Amino acid sequence: MIKVENLKKVFRSGSTEVRAVDGVNFEVATGQLVAIIGKSGSGKSTLLALLGALDMPTEGTIEIDGKNVTDLRGKNLLTYRRTSVGFVFQNYNLVPNLSALDNVMLPMEFAGRSAAERRSRAEHLLQSVGISGDILKRRPGKLSGGEQQRVAIARALSNKPKLVLADEPTGNLDTQTGQKIVELLRSLSRSEKTTIITVTHDQAIASLADKVYRLHDGKLTGS
Image (cartoon, rainbow, N blue to C red; front, side, top):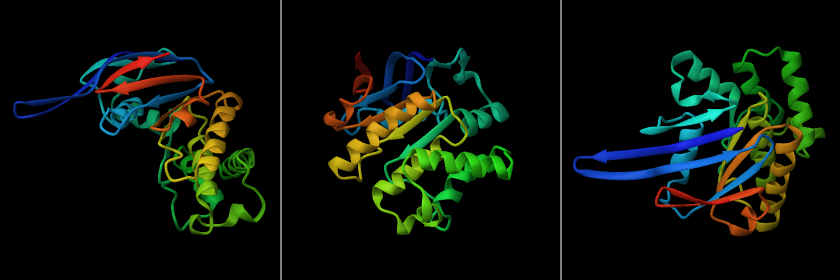
């Protein structure tokens, strides 16, 4: 369960104040796919950064399974980022000189898992997103956009996170491939028992989610 209460992020420059996230409240059950729709500048990326603990809020709380993420500091904060949250980016952000398999194994190495466990988990995840055979050995430059995003999704799930944050995950894909990626995210949220929150500007993609919220000027409305 993800619970967000009165979340605010205010940026100040001299006398100018920008409320990038302004009193956001929502709850999401484990295993759901949530879409947040908003135009550029609406606060979507700031909200994701707060949920991923890449930035700290000005006010409010974020709870995951009863743990207040906004209270975490130092080593506990680093552990949360490494093991409790996964990220999927519009530009994939795969390591170019590593194979698909090694890209998925990398976060587990940072988390201290054994080589055998890393390989077994990575192969399982890649198979679940439709990547197998010789493709496992290919580097990102030899993969299509859809294949790269599938690898990125597998990587985000590698440490069995409670929360996956996807920032415009279909932005660089054609409509048909983008729809398949969102359907895959929805399926994986259930099979991996993780909550997935994606931000998008595409209403057609968002319609495939379990819940849809709209963000406008830092304020959230919707289901």
